[in-house]
Image 1 (cartoon, rainbow, N blue to C red):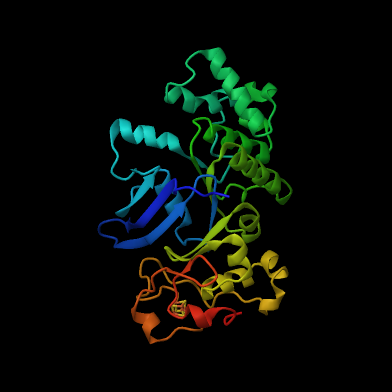
Image 2: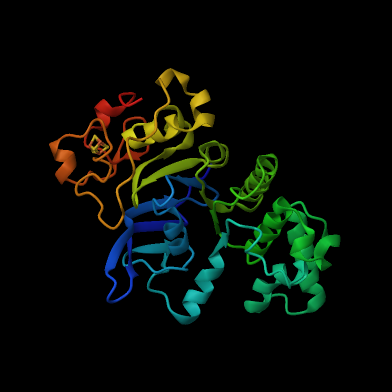
Length: 332
Ligand code: SF4
């Protein structure tokens, strides 16, 4: 189990997008709101939540594809958000991303050799062609693909194999953190477990920290040592996965788990399946106070005006709820 200082620290990070165009009305979308998270070396952190809750924006900020408006992201103690030039380039090697769709994330005109060696070329590593080829063979082997496949093109592979190629490419620079944004959601259920096992194996062998974003709670439970639940841009609960899935505290976590058929089978004792009440509010006009108060059966006056901070919970982890003590088992 991970024991050392966090390799990745996300401190009070927010991101708002302006949408629309002048003359047709503009709106501000609060995609990520005051998120703080840490990931230890060799740890896997799952991030779950409904579609549009800010998971992908957070992932893109973690790998530097978006800049936070406020807050900071530190990798190995160095501030990524303020890094420029050579320092930023060096830091970019430390965190890499595996994308959701293996069908569109690989250039169809490039061979596997070119695809996997591209990051090495960009960063000036393994400059000699034979050495580069050897390194690509090693990377393909580490994700369970035969080095004989390196002269083929992406269309000659299945979805699961393509995602393995994407993973081989992502680990080529030996990052300390891998951010995986819905890495198995485009795959058949039968191959999802194989790809998750590849990631698990790399985590153990290379001591990789993994941020694993998914909407399938069963997959996250299998993959993640710890899980954070996001609602409308904010983290509402963060705990080790066994505790969070067996004894969810936040009312939103309870309804989210209850609404998932796969999770519900193992949690019958918590009662009837129930989806969160009504539609989520628009991120262009998030509710004041606790952002979940418009759907929460336990909401009181304080919930409508004061934002609950993430506080340590009795059974471990942290939860953002004014009524956390009464909430356990009270919603479903
Ligand atoms: Fe519900 Fe209030 Fe807790 Fe928010 S703070 S989850 S509204 S009880």
